[in-house]
Image 1: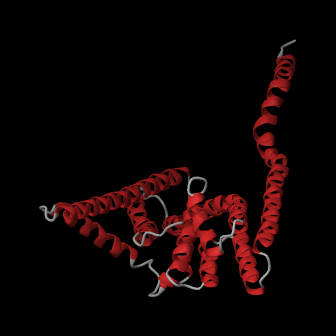
Image 2: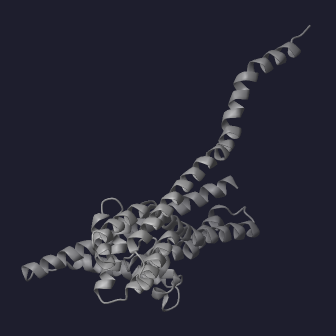
Image 3: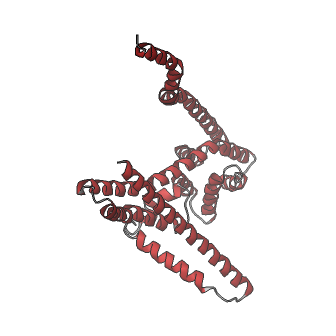
Length: 311
């Protein structure tokens, strides 16, 4: 079992590193081509570098081939799959293809490589055990990209949640200064860039939707959908109800800001209350055995010496 874990770690690490290097190389090539095209447009004409173009086309073809087995059916761009990437802050249209290509590589290609490796280098392993190892590798490769995407989404939601009360305070200041909700959203998107670029980007996209002629309610609901944040959904509901019934928007936002600050304080207190419980495991596993060895070790050695001493 230990040998299998070592083999699995080496194979997974190699596949992950190769996939990341391939993705980063393709992105660098794309950026180089874009810069080259920009220079061509500005200068009028310049000799094209066909080697980078051929390399990018070859890598794109390979990524397309690998992503097809894991890619969902047509229309996934407007489904819950695309919403997962939006909630993780991924808007590059090529990143989902890389994601599904890596998923195919880890789910299909990696188990085949492992099966061949076990067949030729570990012939003493039975067929049943080899099948179990291959299936476990395929399952791990299938769920590993999803776990990484879920981790990225949760980290981004945490950043948005922590900065949301400050954003609401800025919105209160803007509305009390006489700005409309559309102008307040546009102003906030510029003011929050340094503190929280993720939240500023989401509000900037909503301001662009409203400026393009979209309904304000629909733009705000799209904002809550892209972030996946429950507090932001409550904020959108408050803004929509205030706009619908004609109540004071600044007062409603102030109440919402106080409530969110209270929730943030409660989350901090909850994390502080969990610390003693989380410290129990390292105390029992690492600190208490060391203390027992230090305190009782000399006494145990003396007792052993007394009983082993010949009369």
